Length: 493
Image 1 (cartoon, one colour):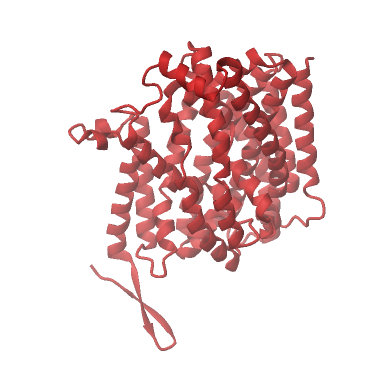
Image 2: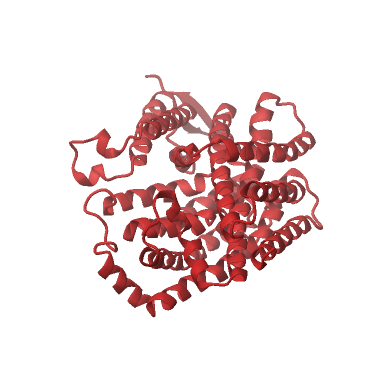
C-alpha cells in the first residue's frame, strides 16, 4: 500500500467522522435535517453553496476543457451565475420561511396554489438529479484509480464512498454536507493553487512564458473561433448557465438553509472569489496541452492527473486524489438529500396526502439509501449515455426559471396552467433536441452565423416562454381590489 492510498483512506475517514459529528446537539426533525433549521450563517453558506457548484467537473472537466478547446474553456467563468442569486434568492428565502417550505416543489406548489404543478416540478427535479449523481460517481471512479496508481478498484472505491455519504446523510442531513464541505474546500484550494502555480513555473519558467509557448506551438489556441465555439456561443451558454444554476433542486434547497435573506445576498457577493481558483485550473489544462499533447477524447479529462504524476511524488498525488474524491462525494450528499426529501414530501405525500410529518421524516431517511442504490446501478450499468442525460438534465431544470422569476412579481402574469404548459413543452423540446443531436445550426441553417452559434437551450426556453404566456393569457386570473380583499375574475377568451 503506497502513501497516496493511505492519504485517500485517511481523508475519507475524516470526512465520515465530520459528517457524523455534525449531528451533535441537533434534534433531527425534517426541517432541521433538510434545511438546517434555516440557521446557517455566512461561512457555512459559502462553503455549502460552493460545494454544490464545484464538483468533479473542476478536477476533470474544467482542466480537460482547457486542454481541448483553449480560449473557449473560459465559459467556466460566468459572472452572471452570481448576479442572478443576488436578486432572486432573498425573496425566495423570505417566502419559504413564511410558509415553512422545504423544497423547490413546495415553493412552486404554494406560489401557484397548485399541488399538481408542485408534483410536476418534483418529477423534473428527481429525473434531473439522478444523472448528476451518476456523473459525480463516474468521476470518482476515475479519480480513485488515477490517484492510487491503479491499485484501488474503481468499483470498490465507489461502493465505499457511497456508503460513507449515505450514512452521514442519513444521520446528519444537511449538517453533514456542510461540515464535510469545509474539509473539501480547504483541500481543493490547497491542491489547485499548488498545481496551477507550480506547473507553469516548473515547465515554462512562469505563467507568461506558458502563454507565449502556447501561442507559438498552437497558433489560435487562445482565441475564440469565428464559427462554432465563437463569442455568440459563449454569451448564450453563460446566460443558460446563469439562469439554470439555481434551478437545480439541491442548490435551491441549500439556499433555504440560510440564517437570513441578507446572508444569501452577502454569499452571492463573495462567492465569485471561487472564480480565482478556476483561473489556476485553466493554467493546468494549458500546461498539459503543451506537455502531453496527444490525449484524445475522454482521455483529455485525465490531463490534470497525468501531468501531476510527472511532477509530484506519490504522497502529493494522494492529496490531489483526496481533494478530487471529496469534490465528487460532497455534491452527491446534497443531491441524495434533496432527491430523498422531494420523493417523500412532494411525490409520496401527493399520492398519500394524509401522511404525517413524523412519517415523512422517517420516510425521507428511508429514501436516502434507495436513491444511493439507484445511482450506483446507473453508475455501473448506465453506459456513456449518462453524459448526454446530464446535458439534457441541465436544460430540464432551466425550464423552471421563467415561471419562478415571474412568481416573484407582485402581480404574476403567469397562471398555473401556463407555467405547467411551458415547462412540459420546454422539457419535451430539450429531450428531442438532445436525442436528435439538434443544434441551432441544424435547426435554422439559413439564419445568420451568430444565431446558428447560439446554444440550443436558447430555443427551448424561448418556446417555453411563448407557450407559457399564451396559455396564461387564456387562463390567468386578475385580482381586482375591493374594500376588504380581492375577488378573482376569470378572463374569458
